[in-house]
Image 1 (tube, rainbow, N blue to C red):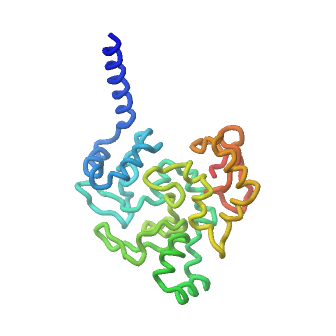
Image 2: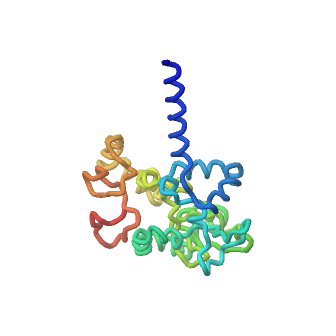
Image 3: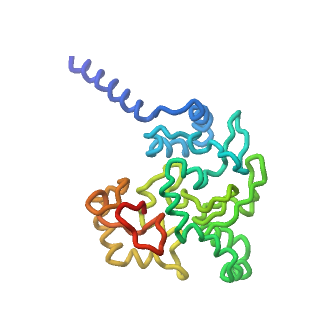
Length: 256
């Protein structure tokens, strides 16, 4: 009797676990998974653990091409956008994209035409500038057609990237793909991808500050996946503000 009860419990546990791991998705999304489960299993696993998967937002929900986007191609009967730009994220996250477009991060690629960048290209050379300057600041991405890009402009995950559809920025620069994690974006180390080193040492300064020490000491008490940024409603303190314009003071209801 005891062994029978144990077997029933195992079956129910496995069934409940499998139902959570396989969200309800569109027919097109299922078509994507049938191939990408084997071709890019890491991306699929990241998506399966994401808030998008729990909300039944699948591959096609994000990669379905917008009308007028030049960087698209026909992929097994579907019109697919290669780059999921902020215009695509705005389908669901319009408020966040509007806030980001007013921020200094959105204009980060303006640096590329500056004297500092010219000196970088001359002193260190084009490859160093591509892997250094452009991977943080972004640059203009040029599409060659048929799902391919000019290799001198892609890949690029710079925060101020200028996309072929005219949008600015890369949400994945902070949130990652394909996990799309708020918790990842809120980690100070995530900012250190760019804000690090002798010419922009903000990450080191923050890490050694009282705020940085408090953040590390209290990280176990924080719900970093919380939708709320209001103190005592999700997080103890916020190390950086993400989407907000730098010129105005953030309000509690604003998305960071």
